[in-house]
Length: 109
Image 1 (cartoon, rainbow, N blue to C red):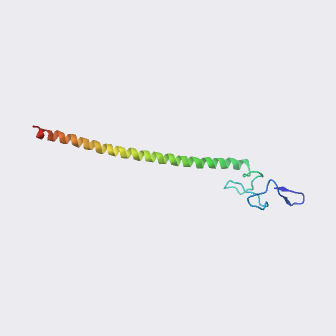
Image 2 (cartoon, rainbow, N blue to C red):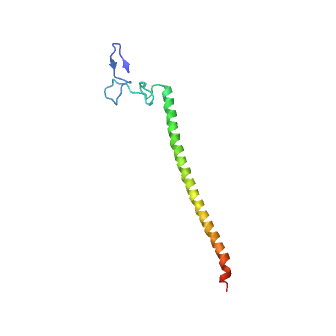
Image 3 (cartoon, rainbow, N blue to C red):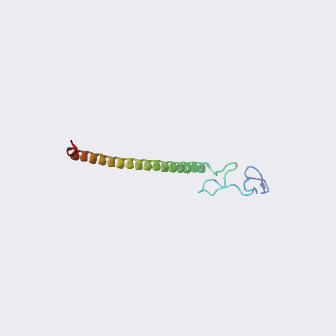
């Protein structure tokens, strides 16, 4: 916010249009920072810009990692179910073959 020589505030680049008063400067966007933002910016410094970018990328990576884990878990479950079904069918085929082997001599004409 610009100040004139007498110490009073002059409405200008540092005013906060969201508050409607123009007296309270905007706070830095970074959640862990309590500093006032620079005029015309939502950050107080270049360090806060970098910190916010890193935090955002970490949050995106967590979401993507979570979705990858969910897909892998679902894939493993489908594979497991398919394997169990295959084992049951293999067991049934083995039992069928065994029954045919045992009962075939009894049913020959």
